[in-house]
Image (cartoon, rainbow, N blue to C red; front, top):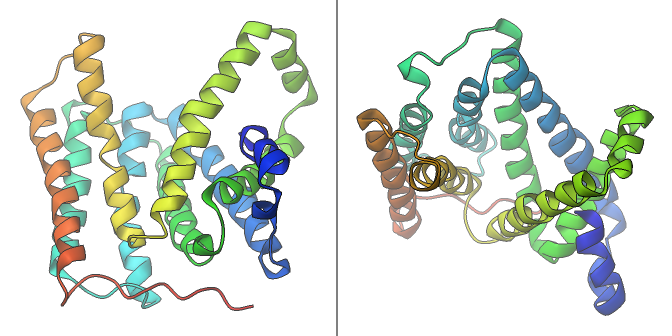
Length: 260
């Protein structure tokens, strides 16, 4: 991801790669503590529980983000947002199908899932404090650079070597990194410039609806009534958060730019 983003900028738009000295530690913290640690947490959650349980816990992120924003006064209390957050969480819970018996409780797995959601809330809130100062391509590239260094330092060398020994596997990893890593991350950081942190996390919860519909269309997966209701609730949450943004008497106060 970092090569895909940083190399073209270095060749054609080098000025966009400039980082203010005060922000070096912020990029390192966001990539190493945020993305790297978050990916480890979600992997532990999946391994110790299952995909449905881990995904459901991950979608607690909007509530954590909003509570965090209220605590640091970067968000104002707004009933529309409260309703949107509630609809998002309940809707995602129904859509993942976790209530049909697929919920698997493991203390450490559940804690890892909640930690992953908290980490993503941190990424969203902390990232918003200095994202407006940079081009989203450069911003994402530097975050991936910090994440790669952190993950490489704890990944066994034999695993890294094995990846390069299989050209087909290497190409698959690169393609996945670009289309499912770099592109969504660039768009995500760009969105932080325009809407509140809570709104970003709620809109991102629409992902589970897209996944469910694609599974139904192309893989023949069954969509239960509960999952359909959940999808409608998630869509309603996205509409409500937009309603909140348009309400001049509600919404969020601008996040402060991080001090020098």
